Length: 119
Image 1 (cartoon, rainbow, N blue to C red):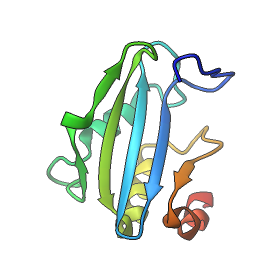
Image 2 (cartoon, rainbow, N blue to C red; image 1 turned 90 degrees about the vertical axis):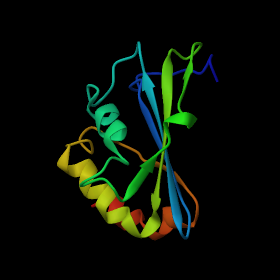
Image 3 (tube, one colour; image 1 turned 180 degrees about the horizontal axis):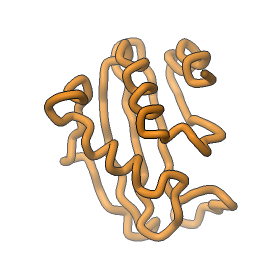
Image 4 (tube, helix red, strand yellow; image 1 turned 180 degrees about the vertical axis):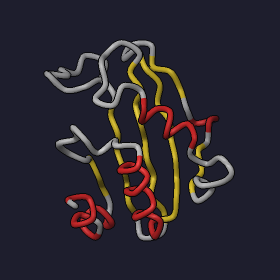
């Protein structure tokens, strides 16, 4: 993976596995490559799981790790799949949907929520 061709794509990446009960989000925060969101998504992901507005999610810092070859950090967040609309609204509120041409998703919920992502 360290020798992957990034092409003209931004350095930060977001992946989402949407199961029937639980959604799992992984975010790669590049230290060296430009991102479409100028660090805004990293700040948003880091705030998930905190008390208050984002208490519906859980971020486990113990799972986060730095990859020296890729020169970045992986973050992991989980939330109940029935909170997908909250997650999408959060992305919109932080204008993180702008410039995104694809969302990498897996699991049964990828199909279930496809229309929501297209909006």
